[in-house]
Length: 615
Image (cartoon, rainbow, N blue to C red; front, side):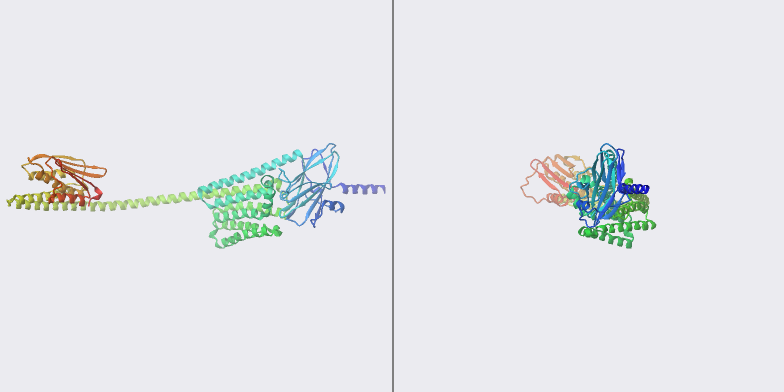
């Protein structure tokens, strides 16, 4: 009988103290949730005094993590009993490993010690998860309570116990890993952004948007935003618009896939995708306005991600060259997204946080997508090179065809030009011959007339025709008819006039420094003929003197200067000289020239014209 009583007492003692958590100075990291008891307050109204006075029944649990999904309509009370088996005081840290839980209250016995959580206004910690300091005297056993509630955000319960040193080592390691993750993602974003500025391919811009928004989402998901970036008011606002941070990465990923995989080529698939793109912002607005359905806010993004995965598989089997890498990346991101969603929703109760599976998945997916984008550049460069090679070959063929055509046309043109030159020479020859015939007739007629006045008139006409005849003679003899040797031309004209006045001893001085074109040469020759004839007729009383003829080109202007050292004349006395009228008419009307006559000491005539003004 005594033995039975002793056995009963031992069994009873085991049940009473089986949930006491023994700690020592050798404690490193210890997951303790399975050694605690919980009580679920469905009313959400119970206080610590109600727990104390009403002696609520706490239930043992056998799991190290509990997930209750988004905004559960109850509070969870957790009781843990700690026993210091050392004789000396222990300083411990209790970590509530859930950065998304809204509020956590920590009680020692039945006294509130501190509060923490995503939406706690007073907390000012530098750890990613809520933490609570615990001091246990030597061989002391102490009870603690946690009250956990979550509004809008998800509620996950996981408790870890550390010594101070072990906690800070673990926290530093975790923050370094997350910093490397965020750094790697931002580097990939900047890399793809630089490629966008280089290529102007909108796919890169959409992908950069996806990386930035996934970084923003994950800053909230792992607790960085609460710890380092946002104060209470900002965090409260972010939580209210949480559907935006969920939808944005999916939106940019959809736009990226639509552009990158050329989904516009698949009309039905593209039409359904456009419907999703309309539903996504509508669902975001709906869940922001009505938070009572918060636990369903990820449904549209998750369904859209699954549809995008289906599209990638479909395009892969349709032979899209870029779909293979995208398919691998989509498999990874779909895995990571579903794990995050099912974990936050309380559907999946697997703890993968210690292995950084989500972060590794995101970085792997970002690398794969960046490789796909880089491969797209390589493919474009190959296609560009092939197009350039085809273009070069086509240019060569075209050049050969054009060269043959040019040679043929050049041959025809040369033949035509030779014929034209021959005809032009023949024309000039005939004109010259006809003018010589006219000159001969005038001479014969002049020889039969004894009237000196008529003789001078016929001689003047003869010299005018000779001036034009000499031009055609020069054009006929020259191979190049684009210009006239002014010296040769002027010398012929002057020689003809000089022969007409044999009894006069007049020297002619030439200063010719340019050529004339045929259009202006005929008028210039006629003007020179009139000027020299006037000098011979009227300038020299003693029948001797000097005539200077100068022709040069300056600033694209022709300058013709004819000067004699004769007696000159008074320009104020009106004269009916046909020669002077002819000079002015040819200069101004035909050459478009300016004419200046100085007749005070001898006569100096200066005519200036531009080649483009010649008629």
